[in-house]
Every structure is written in C-alpha cells, then in structure tokens.
Length: 176
Image (cartoon, rainbow, N blue to C red; front, top):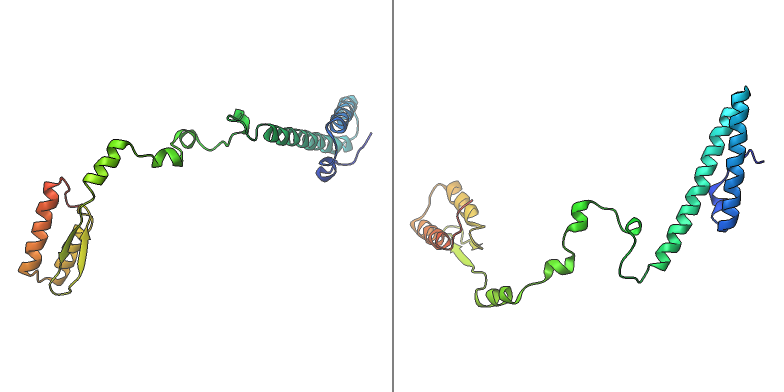
C-alpha cells in the first residue's frame, strides 16, 4: 500500500493497464481506510483518505485525457465528431452560420449589386471646403451638426443639404 500522494507527472508516461491497476489499488486502500475510520481509528486517517481521493481523481483524469486524445486522433479527418469532442461554445454560437455560409451571395443578389450599385452623394460646405460622402444618409447628421456649430448656414450649404436630404428621402433613408 502506498500512503504517498500520486504525482500527475509520473502518471502521463504510464500505459492504460498500469493506470487501471494503480486505480484499483488506490480504491481498495481507500475502502480499508474508511472501514478503519468507522471502527474508531485515529484522525490521521482523515488526511490519508483525503490524499487517496485526490490521487484517484488524478489517475482518472490522466486516463480520460489519454482516451480523449486517442479519440481525437481517430476522428481527425472524419466528417463528424462525437458531441463531447466538439467545441462547447454556446448554443447560439453553434447554430450560427459559418464564415463561408455568411459570405455566400445568391445569383439574384449578385445581379442586383451589379446593376444597382451603392449610390454616393457629395455635399460641399462653402466656408471650409469640406466634403462629406453620404452613403444613404450616414454622414448627413455630421453635416447638419457642423452647419449648426458655425451659426451661419450659407444659402449654398442649405441648398445642397436639402437637395441631398430630398434624394435620400426619395430612396427611403431618413436622418438619424
């Protein structure tokens, strides 16, 4: 019987049969210590029981880890993996589209993008000569804020602002 703790580093080099044999030995020793404890043994038995339980856990951990690594090698190039070998993640993450599936574009969508590309509108401010590219009204609020900051909206700016706003409203895009 061994009363010393089992080191995990010593276990990794052993084969499966040796690990099983050691596990059986540890379990029988644990059973004997428990019967001695019930019969009225010393308190030192409690620490030995604790150490034995942890040693059994280490042996089982090594056995399970080697078994899983062997299974990973076996299923390496297969189409499907067993559920316990797949990455856990979350349910939503497992069900979302893969990167390849997300980038796929249908023929109809390709034609639509080719024939009706994204429109771009440029609006010029007279006093700063700053240009804003409006992609469906995204920068429209920026232009409006800059006009409000200067407190002197020129007629040209106001005209171009309203023209861009009208075009975007026609396309179904509204200011944010």
